[in-house]
Amino acid sequence: MPLKTTSTNSVPAFLAMAVMNASSQLEAAGTNVVHLEVGQPSSPPPEAVNRALTSALAKTSTHGYSLAFGETALRRRIAAHYGDFYGVAADPDQIVITPGSSLGFALAFLAAFDRGDRIALATPGYPAYRNLMLALGIEPMLLPARAEEGWVPDLEALTAGDAPLPDGILLASPANPTGVVMSDEEVKSICEWCDRNGVRLIMDEIYHGLTFGARPATALSFSDSAIIVNSFSKYYCMTGWRVGWAIFPPDLLETVERLAQNLYIGPPRPMQAGAMAAFDDYPSLDRHVDRYRENRDVLIRELPDEFLGNLAPSDGAFYLYADISNLGTKTPGPNGPDSVRLAEAMLHEAHVACTPGVDFDQQQGHRHLRLSFAGSTRDMKEASRRINDWLPKFLASR
Image 1 (cartoon, rainbow, N blue to C red):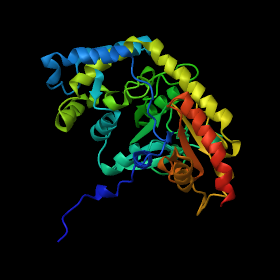
Image 2 (spheres, rainbow, N blue to C red):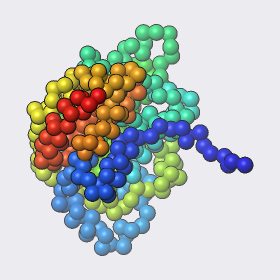
Image 3 (cartoon, rainbow, N blue to C red):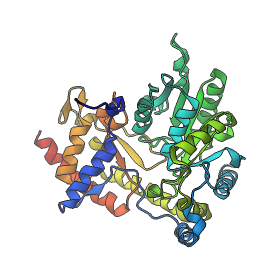
Image 4 (cartoon, one colour):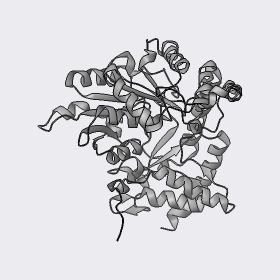
């Protein structure tokens, strides 16, 4: 007799990680693959971070449990960062250190919502939001964000019909996969709309610091009820460290603490010691941002126009969201171009890995590919060379 399994087995796969696995298999067989599939910085964190970790490892206390909300010193340092970076006061008592930002989202969903609640989120968007909601019994309510609207969803459309408003809204700026950065006025307007309509806002600010224009405002400047999620992974080049943080409003703190205690006891203590030093060298981190800007410009300049199509602006993060609609007659699918088929062919024939747009948008993602330019400039040039050499042959063979 078959044994019971959970219904969450039906949660969709995270395609970016599946592409990463396929790339690893090719590399294990001796193939050189250029990686544009995963948003992972190719640079190490500031040297001070490594020194802080090494020093902490020599202390016996470093190897014990952390408090559920994380080390007090790091929470205070993050609060100081909000003053330094944004000119806004943050209460360290409301800052929760998490084992990666993913646990920050899990805490937010579990503390603020019940099974059957509805959370609106922009599409295209980070797939793990939607997939985690489904696993927790929360209904994702997709808000289309399209090129003609600047890739920012229109919240007023939620009040236009008779349907009830969602219980929450999750938005990101800079956004993955489009790289769109909301203006300060847009962030303020969203915060005010949520407060006015009694809708809980979760703001993903994980790519803050990775912008190519003016520094965006944090939602903390405009709302004291929003949940704000951030991470050391992207700007601070610490993806594998799995350290993030979230700012929770006071009404959720007791529930969040109980959840954290039972889910993971406390975030890893050694990693927090290293993270303390991440704020000490903004200039070196900003040099990485300058390189990402150069990488973005290399891809835009050197990749074929028909491959990039109608690009999203990419004013932040480290992604290009390419529109492959112009390749539709050569990469047919049931609804037009097929990004999965194109990505598979590019990986196995050109040995360049990227992520199909269907990972981020189940409705229109077949028309898009996400290209990460978080790697080296040399890799961006090599990827461009390979795609330029391969694409005409691929199209001619179809």
